[in-house]
Image 1 (cartoon, one colour):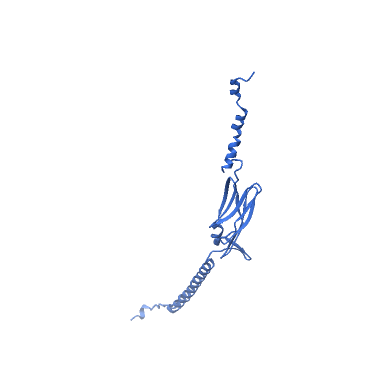
Image 2: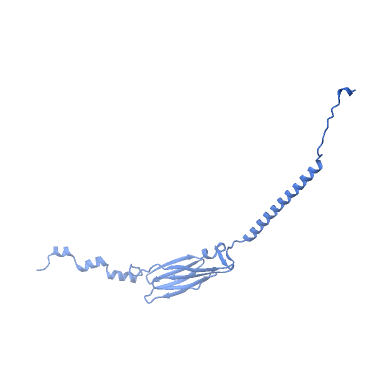
Length: 200
């Protein structure tokens, strides 16, 4: 006996159930052909990191790494320039490192999707004049005019202290001299008692 219509409606077509659960392979293929990314072939976001940076009054060099799950690029950014670099895996994943104005860009892509990470380079080059640097004498904070300001302040303090000391010394000598000039010494007054019988 053939299956009843109710039985077929209840259990459904296995092919339809598979298509409903996993999606139609023909539709997925059409999406790939049209350039629409699916969850399976979408790329992961890359990671752009700064390994080190060196700066001086006229140059700035930043060492950077652009990395994805399967690819990696190590490069450097120097004085607002970097050489664009590109690597491609056998699975047709591409990693590109490039510079645009004040930014470094790490781009990860495949034929149907792309993602990128970006770093603003100004924070590593333009604000470095206030960062501490290490020299043979130890760490110093490189601030324009700092040493001149300190020298001037110390010099003013020394001059003021010397003037106060000199003023006090001169004042003490002047006060002592005035005391000597106006002193009359001790004055003794003797009263003599005259008898009444010899008074005139």
